[in-house]
Length: 307
Image (cartoon, rainbow, N blue to C red; front, side, top):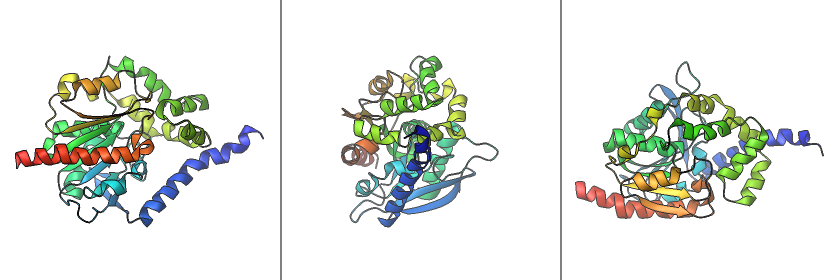
């Protein structure tokens, strides 16, 4: 059979999977909402806290680049045993809109939207759990306004300065996805599970489309060295910090894991052998267990010390 006969499936598979995931979440009691934050139309999901959970321990889940809030589908139910869970679609991703007059949001605008989400929707300092770009955003907010968060957990975060913008150039070239060979390269860089990689091959056109959209290409092009973390900056974090890393992640530039491991102030650390860039998808149960332990051992202790 000729390859072009698979084109319709390749384009439609990913949207179909996302649609099924969204429908399943809604049937399980998760609600979805739309609002305007920092002048941008924003969509998010809310899982109420489970019986016996702490209403004053909300969790805000923040996805990475070219992703959306549904990436947290396998973790939301387990995390709701801690408290109410919110998963946001960042500007330009998922079902959220764009800043007025542009089709992408700068890092500072993503941070401003998350800040507004905590103040105007959640109404209480939240534990920020962010993957990739989401970890970058979470940490930027915690550095700027620590009173808005009870802690930060980063899953394979971006934003390490390393050797400046040149050290990120191979990453930028890759996410430009000029062809399907590059898409397949990204699969192998991002995911640690060979069966999952093979399944993703069926939807490679849809995956390529995600990376070619303006919110990705223009964000990458506009990022400046001032957006990245310097080692000394991270030492100023005033909230409990957790770091989860999939040890087969090759999506981020080499040295990213060591940068955060060595420069974050006393992070709680979970390394996941055989796991790639998206631990919330590949190791959801381990992620949930780590977050629960982090809340019990770091967040509640910290809150008690400052009460």
